[in-house]
Length: 338
Image 1 (cartoon, rainbow, N blue to C red):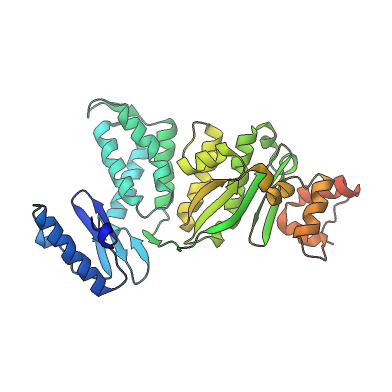
Image 2: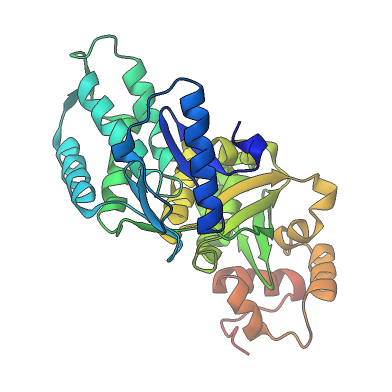
């Protein structure tokens, strides 16, 4: 009803949050909301009604429109850190204890980007317990999620900045059985599985595609503070697990954990977009630099001349570069700085 009247409002049960561009507009929205609620027969808790301001607490989270950030109260943050440390020492926890922890972590997720990724398995564990006193063994994925929260909260200052309105859409990644690559802005990277990550030679292509996204996020996370990120990928399984924030595949889940750790640390929101393989040309060429045809096309169309070997070191490991030089020119040697 309020939206139809042109106002921006968030409703959670019987709590309402109004956000408008000006103090006058906010006051108008508040007056309309109160009149509407009274007309519908609701009782107003006047002690909780707050006049238009630039700092307000909503659902336990402080919202500051002057600094464009959300904050968790220090006292509650400290208590949560202590509770997480205690849970890591437990061998078992009751349904009621897990519900209490999940509620607090859900509250913290309002500020911690990607935090809900590491809450889902705790909730799944709770759903498997019928009575409040029934207990669950602290092991496996649930313990891993609690450890993620414990490790992250040990360095988290309780603050998170609002995201920029316009997302970054130029990130592309791709992987093949021999290597992977990614491109963002004017930077790019190439990895060779044999030279850089030998264990990856045994992975399924879906896992390799997800790994390439994780590598891209690791490379550029520091440049994405306060941004919304759309990663373009031609692998449907990778797109799905990133957007759902979970996967039944343990290897994919390990990549997601690293990805969302960085998302929380650097305060950015990431989603994936599926693009047809025939349109993912740039990333496809980079992931296949070991192939002379793809290498020539990439260097000709996307790399500014003059091209020095020392420049290539910025975009791949020294081992991968040695491999490329030998593969493409037949030249061997340890000097790759010239």
